[in-house]
Amino acid sequence: MANDSNKFQAIISHSKEYGFIFPSSEIYDGLSAVYDYGQWGSELKKNIKDHWWKSMTQLQENIVGIDAAIFMHPMTWKASGHVDNFSDPMIDNKDSKKRYRVDHLIEARIEALENDGKKADADALQTEMDRLLKESDYAGLKKLIEDQKIKCGVSGTSNWTDVRQFNLMFSTQLGSVSEEASEIYLRPETAQGIFVNFLNVQKTGRMKIPFGIAQIGKAFRNEIVARQFIFRMREFEQMEMQFFIRPGTQKEWYEHWKQARMQWHLGLGIPAEKYRFHDHIKLAHYADAACDIEFEFPFGFKEVEGIHSRTDFDLKNHQEYSKKKMQYFDSEINQNYIPYVIETSIGLDRTVLMVLSQAYTEEDLSTPEKQDSRVVLKFPPKLAPIKLAVLPLTKRDGLPEIGREIMDTCKQHFKCFYEEKDAIGKRYRRMDAIGTPFCVTVDHQTKEDQTVTIRHRDTMAQERIPVSAIASIVNGQLI
Ligand code: GAP
Image (tube, rainbow, N blue to C red; front, side, top):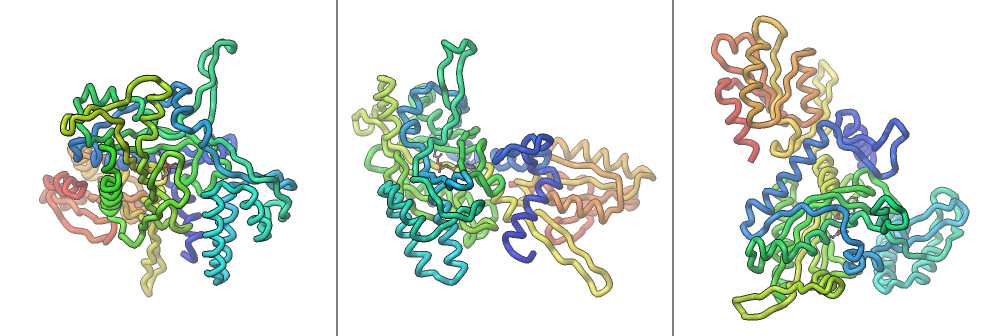
């Protein structure tokens, strides 16, 4: 692999070729920044979802899950601040009519300076951009773009409009009769479904603070600059958890969740050096502290998850707009209060891309006699789309029948795949390419002693094991 940009392109091609991710409505030339998950991509995504859900709701006794609707009362988004504040500063090039997010445009310049070895200039530009963004100084941002002589990639000119804010929410009409229809939004985050259900869950579940509510679901954002495959999409999924706490304890809980979430990431078997924290300088409209967990994608360190100390901003505003009390009675201190919230918010699609990027490996297996190579996806077994492939060596001599019996037993426990066609070496390579951690081969010896060869994906080592032990050996690797 020549460089990381090639690696990223290779991952995109591989994802399509092997049934992980396709451009949406591809027969109509696709839809920008919208993707479909194929047969193996959807298994991978579901395994990540299940793993997160289990770690949040099964392994944490004080967190429960919900599944709220995508459509919410329009007042929700007024109260949450999204109608007024959920926007990005944008700038248009007057010649190409192309629109850019201001921070992306300047970040590209920072990257170019770094690549030219001008680290001090790059750092100074970063600091200046952060300052202007924090102060929402749009005239200053435009001047910075002009001073840096940043050009549009399409027209090649610096003929820029003023910097303006664009709201990222999609809106649609609820109701069929146009006079009665009202404008509603596709939710831009799942979090608000949790906030509006805070009291429902607290009361019906008799939850005591501190406790959390988790949710996995679709979110929609009209990203102006949608790029980098499934990293930035217009329709995507989030896995969010709001942890309700006593006011004044937010610092310690924020630290707790920062560490807990990093541990979850490390539990995926990804080395610590591939992660870093990035503290926010410009805080979102709801936060008093926030950081990202960044992963080193082939295109650099980028956010996968946000951890936000949201204060009582959301519940307080919902109380104000709905005129319904959002208070909790804390019997330990005999006080009523609106809880504070620590949020953990991870993008499911970004996690898929992270796991794919980490797993994708090209190996040169050449010997002096023969050129050879393989592409292998080294997924942790618990996330792999298929756990076990059952491969009879030939289509004759009763071997397929034994293979079918193994399938019937093992598919009760985990996802299996059966294949008779082609030479065994070819079949192994196909399983490597979709990340199947174990293959068992049924051969003539199986008929004699009820053993099979099990092949381990990463080492390619093979050993003989009893047929009766297959399910427990594979199961043992799925924790
Ligand atoms: N409720 C808080 C919230 O939504 P965010 O930082 O805007 O915070 C949280 O989003 C996570 O959602 C991000 O860390 C990222 O993983 C994912 N995400 C956000 N926008 C995305 C997009 N356009 N495409 C894919 N994932 C996205």
